[in-house]
Length: 111
Image (tube, rainbow, N blue to C red):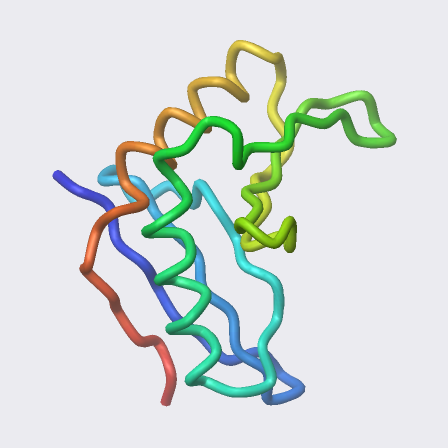
């Protein structure tokens, strides 16, 4: 099963999206957006950039655990991963974003 995007609104009224893999696991979380229309622009940026390996910034957190950022052409962060237990797991996460990022399925979780 292919992945999908979920759009939600947080307590302060801002919006975010997550990209989920076919199994429902969150594989990428966006930054916060003030306008709902900006969320769609962010999703389109993931759809365009997720297939390009050079757009992934591989990092280690302060806790020593690996994670990644997906960046746009302008080097702005589009989304972040969660922390992984190993570099190998992080690479599998990147592959999952590459495989699911082009999906056009979008679910809105806004009341």
